[in-house]
Image (tube, rainbow over all chains, first blue to last red):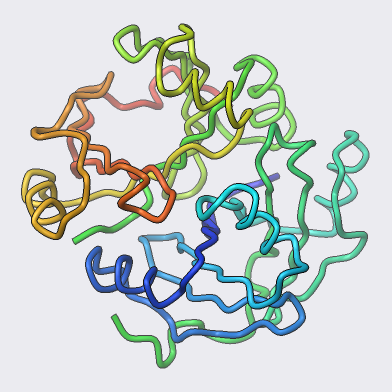
Length: 145
Length: 145
């Protein structure tokens, strides 16, 4: 089944401006800025209790994130939930008729096993699933407040 | 400063349909359905680790939530962060130039002290602040999985 909120993804136009707000003013501890070339984004994670906020800036014009920003403007983009067994969840949700975008888990920048569920199957919400414990690096080494 | 994600608010058109998905299929423990007449919404909270998901259905056509649903369709609506001292945060964020919608905390259905920050001040994200410990009732009494 599906559990903890791992993170909430927020798309921004300018990561520097967003960091000034979230880290500078609101005071969230932040990781360093990271680049995911395959997904054509730069991103930062902010620590918010047991969950995180992911600030995402597209670095190319032809990705889903870039189109989201162009069409809807900056804002909330996805929710990521932790699951115990992502392969089992992919199968279970597909069997229930949901449109899961990944046959097998894709790998995140830190080795995370991830899968996305299409917003059409989730009442308008893009949902990411994260296999518990699959992050291979501690995001918070080198990340200051 | 601003801390834990208390909940993520998601607007839905049909709370029954949303519960079938979130409680029935995804397996989140859920509270009973609650009605907030002043805000003209019905809502359910789902337990997701240290945070919650709030499913919100408008019950009137002339509220912000109803207009959100009409314009953008169902989807992610707001993020609520816990703060230690909500009055201090309202003052601090206003001094920094943010548009905080509440002069003094409004009260939620369970006595919560709450304040909203306009999305224009938060890069497109409607932000709710929740005074830590100000919920006067345990949301989970009577709420089954």
